[in-house]
Image (cartoon, rainbow, N blue to C red; front, side):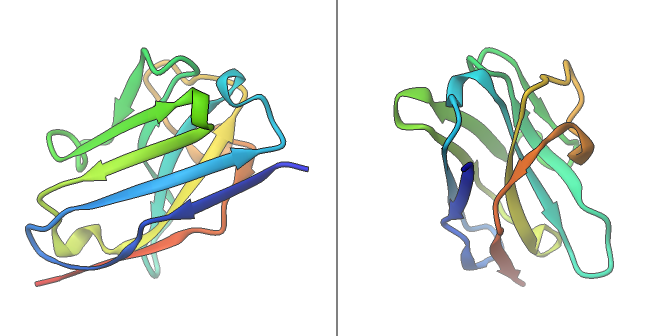
Length: 125
């Protein structure tokens, strides 16, 4: 049984930082591309950042470029998202997901099969 669990969300002031973590079990972690997605109230879920099996290729949404860094530790079956210079518009539920296909420059929710329950990020102004 595959389990994906996010952690690290919380309340932070604008300009602050958070590091999200995601652990996946029940699958061969380094066989899967991984991604971070977010969904704000009333909006569609969107890709924030995705990373290939080895970590050698990454994708960032325009909103994340220069502020967020995705990386993974395959020995620990863990994915991370370092978020700096947070803005109120980053407020959303953040989800981690695993997918068998690397999107080669894309990061869409439909490409990912296994999902966590999400961790809330709230950025106050």
